[in-house]
Length: 474
Image 1: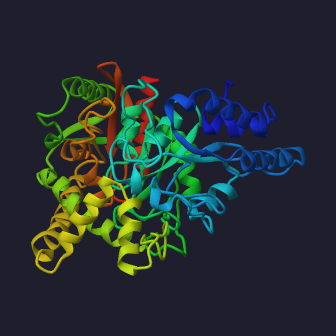
Image 2: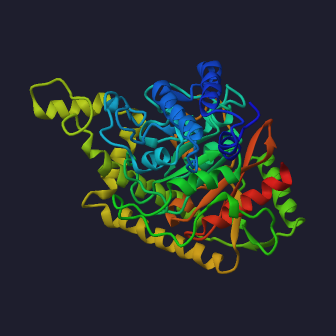
């Protein structure tokens, strides 16, 4: 099929060059051909998707005005509620949980005419950087199936990278959209905290989580974000937006843009091939109208430790509801305590249990001040660090990941090594600012991602930067 992007698909359907059903069948065939090897999907919604596509074709036949994403196939991560469908968050404890309502993002996608084709694999409760902690399967990187796709939204990234869908949704708590986008060679965006409703998202860290798009172009991320963004009465953290991210207004050059390169983001542990690709990308931006300035974010080294206190603390609280009584599979025992222990003991995987224990520890009476309260103070300081730099520059440039995709199983038993894969992404979640990863070359034959960051609710600036970079690199 010649129409590869969401924007092209929507235009072709409106122009009657192709039907929405034909588009859907193309992508369903791609899933059937490729997903046995890649393992991106947990479930494909063929019947519902066909009904949605047929409805779009009826609108075309009747001469009706088409909504923004009419006929565009999209996949959703397994932690987003879709009424009548299982949402397991990659966990055995939610194996039989069927959503009673639509999450706000799903509701808005439906209203925009998008065709929701299925739910994608993820690390259990979004805890992981490789999509290997899923209770159901291990997803593989379509670029090299011996490698991980990144995580926790690895299923969505792999689905887009392999051409099984043109766009997909993921959630990003510490880099879970941008890091797999980097490892799989696609575009992935984390919007500003509060830009997109989290209503109907199974929470990991409520002050960190944000839903965002995967795509093959920056303009496609702008289109998806335009549809799902905005204030929501069901989520008090969302805000009324002063501007939109419509792809028609996205600029395609670096004229007048100032870029900051933080010296702290070029660490010794970074893969030499990644460093070389990033340096070439920065030089390309400089040679094409972008002003480059070295900046300093001295608190960068504290972002990862602060994150791995705040996030487990919030996770331990959020996951308290999954006890086999309120939510989750019930433990078969006549004793209440044993029932709780059985439900959580068998329902949760190793990484989830590890983070629940860390979170409970840092929130306990004897350690709250020493750890959690101090991490919140560091969080405020990191946010101020970014504010200072964004008074000097429009956008920050950095690597998305310090390495390319690693081999399946290589870091699975080393949680610290896995956590370090998020070293360049967690700061954006700590500060609540937007970030986007775009492909910028290869190292060791594998994709490398370039990250753009901007001030809170300056999402348009990073989409602009990503689109301008794409225009140079094709």
